[in-house]
Structure formats: C-alpha cells, structure tokens
Length: 229
Image (cartoon, rainbow, N blue to C red; front, side, top):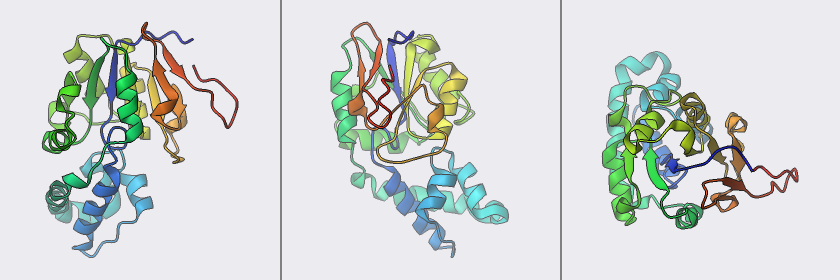
C-alpha cells in the first residue's frame, strides 16, 4: 500500500469527468477559422489542453494574440455554450464515483468557467454529487499553479496530503504536485508527455479504487506487470 490516506477526491473537469475536450476543440477551431487560422487537434492538445484560454491562444496566435485573442475567446465561449448538450460524462468516471467510499469528500477543481461547469453538471443530473466546485473565477493563478487545488482543500478544510487529485493534463499534474497532493493521471488510450510525473497512471478510472480507510489502490499495469499501489 501507499502512505496516503485520502479524505477527498479532487477532480479536474474536462477530460476527466466529462468528454468535453473534443467539443471545446470544435468550438475553438471554428472561432479561429473565422479569422483564417487553422487549429489542428495536435495543436489543441499541445498548446491549449489543460491551460487557460489566454495561455493557449498566445502560443497559437503568436503576435496576433493582442489584436485577435480576446475576440477569439469570446467567440469560442459562445460556440461552446451552444454545444453544452453535446458534452457527455465518461462512463468510467461514473463507475468510479459510485465506488468511492461513503464519507469521502468530492470536489471539482477546474480552469473552466462556472457557467459551463454548472450547465454540464445540471444536464447530467450530477450537480449534487460534489461538495465543492472551484472554477476559473475562484482563484488568481491557473494550473500549473497549485491555486485551484489549494482553494478546494481550503473549502473542504482538509490538508493537501489528504486530497487525491484526478487529472489528464501535464499542467494539472504539475499543479497537484505544487499543491503537495498525490495525483492520478488517467490516460484513456492517449500518450501525453508529462503524465509520467503523476503519482500513479491509469488507463481508465476502472483501474482505480479507494479503500474505506482511504488507501489508493491501482490495478496492475498490464504493459509492465507492475502494481502501482
């Protein structure tokens, strides 16, 4: 077993609980296309995934960001809001939520806007599943800064070491480490550089369990034969 005794699970939102990233990509690609800029999926995952809109678009637009960035963000937000009903929960995330022992606190710590998060949760009838929801409006510095996770821990009145983070992006993994929290990176068939820094990696959340005591148990990794627990 591992030395962590978990009292709360802090979920990233996009790409962990909900399969929203393809929808975000399409909204961003359309907003950029209206300016004559092509956004590929590789560009999206490399520059935008797990980062703020400003940081991602600065890399994508370069010198054009100051002139065009704000209107691309505004347009992307409108297009994404129109497509919130396309965002579906990951089935393995739902199964994991049902396996979490009673008494474990559940939180969301995300860089997404509250309007988006609450709209998606409402459609999925999951609004009451989480004790705390921390969104982009609730902190000053986005991931890879630890602010989102530390804000959630403060609201839960728990020490960082008692909070398990579930992430899918390198910036999220880095933020969890900076917060002093153990972190599970869920890959779901993707190979993303930077996820190897997580405390544990899983293929899906079906590979992850919490015991009643709060111990983290990860199934044997079939590619290596190692038990990551």
